[in-house]
Amino acid sequence: MTRLALALLTTLALAGCAGTYRVDNAVQSYAHWSADIPTGAAGAQAPAAVPQAPQTYRFERLPSQKEGGSAEDQNRLEAWTRTVLETHGWTVAEAPANAPWRVQVTATTLRNARSPWDDPWAGWRFRGQVVAGNGYFYWSPMFVMPMDMPWYERKVTVVIRDAASGRVVYETQAGHDGRWNSTPALWQAMLQAALNGFPVPPSGPRQVDIDLAR
Image 1 (tube, rainbow, N blue to C red):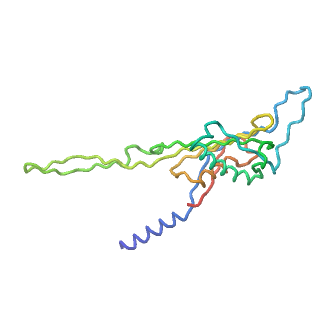
Image 2 (image 1 turned 180 degrees about the vertical axis):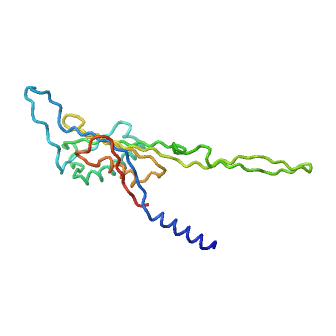
Image 3 (image 1 turned 90 degrees about the horizontal axis):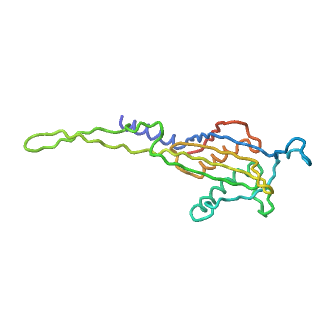
C-alpha cells in the first residue's frame, strides 16, 4: 500500500509539473491617438487616424534605467516588449532618429513575506520537550516557526509617445500578484496582457488571463 501511495503521489506531481499555470492580469489602457484641437480653432485639422501596422518606433529610457544593473534589466525588459509589439506589427526602427513613435516601458516588483490572505500564525507548531533533572521530568514548550512563502506584486507599464511632439498617445499597464518566481515567460505574459487590444483597447479596467506551461 505504501508503494502504491508513493507511486500515485509521484504521478500526480509529474502531472502537475507538465501542466500550466495562469498569469491573471489586472489591465487598464488609455488610447489617445488624436490631438485635442479646440472646436473652430484656426487651422484645425481632422484628428489623426489610429496608426495601422506596420509601424516603427524607438525605445526611450529614464535616467535611472541607463546605468549599471538597471540598464541590464532594461535591456531584457525591452527585448520582451519588442517580441510582444512585433505580434502587433510594430518593429524597432533601423534608424531610431527617424522613428515616428517613442516607447517607454517600466516594471516593478514588490516582494512580500507572505500573501495578504495568509494567516501569519498558520503553520506554527507547538512542540514539547522533556528535560530530565534531579529525577524529575519537565515539559518545556517550544514554538517552531513556519517557512514563509513569498508573495510577489508585479506591474508593467508601457507608454507610447508621438516622436515629433512628445505627446502621449497610448498608456497601458498590467498588474499581477502571486507566488510565481520571476521568469522571462511571466514578464512576457504580463506585457502581452498589457498590450491586449492594442492599438484600440477596450475601455475601463479588465482582467486578461494568460496560461503558461510549467
